[in-house]
Length: 160
Image (cartoon, rainbow, N blue to C red; front, top):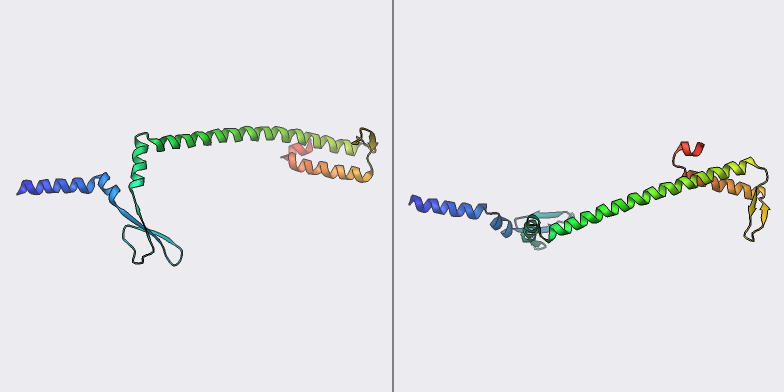
């Protein structure tokens, strides 16, 4: 009698504590209440507006991940893509900093030139030199100041 009870306890314990049995056979219910709050439970709700989910997919994914399956490979591939994207972004940001520094320097030189001379000549679209009018000169100063605000990122750049 004692042996039969011990065997029964061992078998029940093995079934109860087996992760394959527990994780695979649990039903999970999902529903949305009248306040649009999503609920999950192992107990079936009283209303009939629910979805039944199983944990089989979760268990399978975990099993594949632990054994180096396709999920692990997908995760590795995603991590590689993210790393590659971050490196590309860093290169782009560095190039943008170089371009901004050049544009800042050009805008500062334009302001210096426009403020240093009473008459400033430019090359018009026809390839001929002409003197800027006062109105055009003010417009160029305004444009160069906007470029300084845009490209000169710190006060040190703006003052140099």
